[in-house]
Length: 366
Figure 1 (cartoon, rainbow, N blue to C red):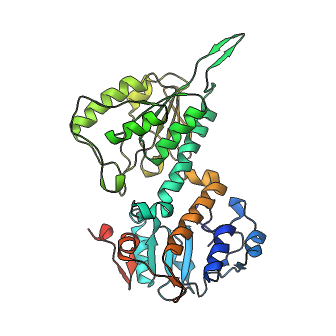
Figure 2: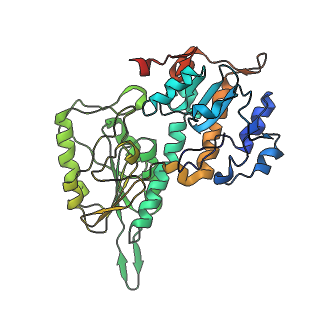
Figure 3: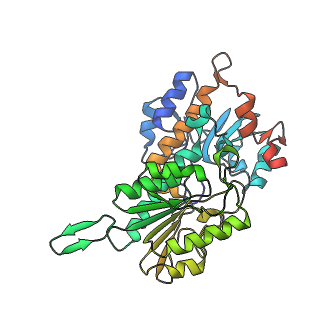
């Protein structure tokens, strides 16, 4: 389907994945203009065998999307059709209820379990990887100085100091990108297991050592909220470190919850004028006090930026990866006899939100 959400430039199928779906025996219909903002022409879809149709959803047994489609736009889809997309189940619960009411089987790709066999299906990882890269590029663009150290006849330009807060997929890519640009990079996370990953990328780990026994590792590799003792110790450590930084990238998210606050106004005030903070969690409430989606906010001489949809700023690449995630998922369960995928319990129960007219996912019913 062509995406209708404001600012959404991605598309859920690429010519590459359309060709592969057709090879499995599927008939693929694409709405005209669906890939336009991701630099994919209608002719590219037609060339691999897709049917271009304004009413592409008519009779569809599986509807692919980047974001969850408006239930009204699904009129004409087959009874019990699958809706496969990033559905934002917590933020769009009312829409999930409408999917149930409409008899659709809604499959939330962001609920994909973080297990080995599902790695190639994980939209959060593929999109976060690009987000981490983009955050550093945008910060570099806002920063009024060079990233690498430069030795010239006129004198030496010092390397920028970049601090990454949160070392998940986005944070690791941010570290790698900042290093490639020549910055001096440091990073921190509530999970002590990330220390080796930080070191492996050539960055300096900044960790609270005085509070023992707090690992911060939650289910599926996600970070959990920390105790008050740890939060206080972390705040003190960050406050002293952040004052020396030129660039700060924050990436901390907790599924189903507002983003944790990592940087206060007082900490922003301690930074040098001309410094830049990129808040990757701004759409979920923000890690940085005062950050606003899609706006450059200047506080105490520090520029703060965050996008409500960072992957959409790299539409071609993020679409290609997202489309492969969807293909990898559906093809892994494809039943040749039935001519459609048949899910197992482990993954099916994890991502299925609605079935038989009801909301069935335990994470939404708990």
